[in-house]
Length: 144
Length: 416
Image 1: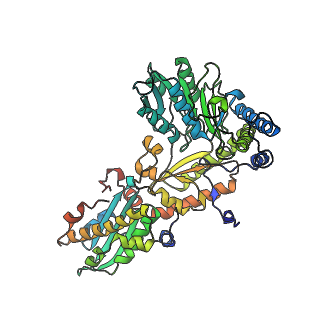
Image 2: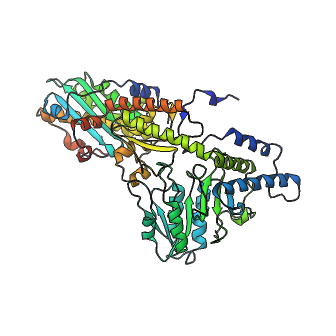
Image 3: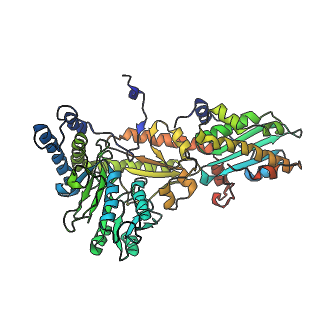
């Protein structure tokens, strides 16, 4: 299948690859939210780490991704977009915007959904750690 | 006309999918596309005779490749058609009860067969036959004991492929054939990946029906053959395509003369070259496997270590997904066991049937070599794959977990 130039660019030079520590370390950090979505047997797992200020601004974001080129590009793009945004602004990002930006074909829409889910999951995690009201119930059943 | 085929092209390691047609084959074909365009069914003029002569020569060449008599070769459009004709044709001919009833007879095949065997069997299942789909063991090799255990008094047909198209494993064919002959059961084998690559003798190997294809052995696409045993026992088939009665009534339709001429030549070339070619390809395969395993931790060669074709290897690279790996080696044409382009995200059913974990199935590549593969190409492939896997592992959350000592299979993933 042919990939768009933007997907290829993100694949070759992904933005913000990394983490803010091992799984144990980030669990202990209150300023870091962790989102891991997907499953290896489905062929894609996205891990998003966000570092959030007390004021609720995402100061930095790092991703890791096991998945196809579109999944890698979607998570790379997501980290770019959420950096500098407040958590509420980040929650407003829709998967359809990722689809549009990367020109994803229909069979790859689930990659963008996964990226949106990883943003939500990471923010939920940060909120939980910091005693903010979460929207877990509203999004737990998010199926795709 | 603009030639779009001259762009810089990837090197080709997908020869289990199809092969380049040998120039010596093309040369034999050309006259039958231009001046010698007769129909082999035309009995009363030179054009027809010329075509018939070409077909009969090819029939001899195809028969010689498998140790058969020329009269036992039926030309088809390819292995899919041969498999359909063999399986449906034999089942319907030897059915214990007429159409429309159940209990028409028992068929044995295996779960990791090609779809061109599985789907005809599934159709027969709907039409009143019982089908046993053998579960392959972890090494992928179907043994004679596995088949023997499933044989019943009403078993009429066993269809087990000679070598698997995704992992190259070789099933116990002569022994399964012998078992079927002893029990008077028709034995069909899909030899698409085997014939032309490995020595074949339908007498010694106890085969009743053998399918193979031209385009996997450096011949043109759209041609194949079915060997149908004529004595001890004489195997009869109910035709699928009816019409002019060509191919002893088993496969009507004007013959594809140029294709058949090329197929015959391809068979002849394989017969002469398979041994030296096999030795060369085995070295390539071994080099790919050992050098990649040395350069990249957590790699796994799928299928039995020794009972495998020399030209196919299937390797899983843990913690990276196959499609993204293909993207990283886009100048190498090969296949992945991951089918992330479909909505279901199902990894290869062949690897799954062997019990290869889903994440390792998603992480697999099939590399298949040919007559034209070079040492340099193998070097390049090893370097490219290593680079791509290491690039992807830097991004892989699964690789991090592995490094932290976490067992990935024990994590409660949020499946979707």
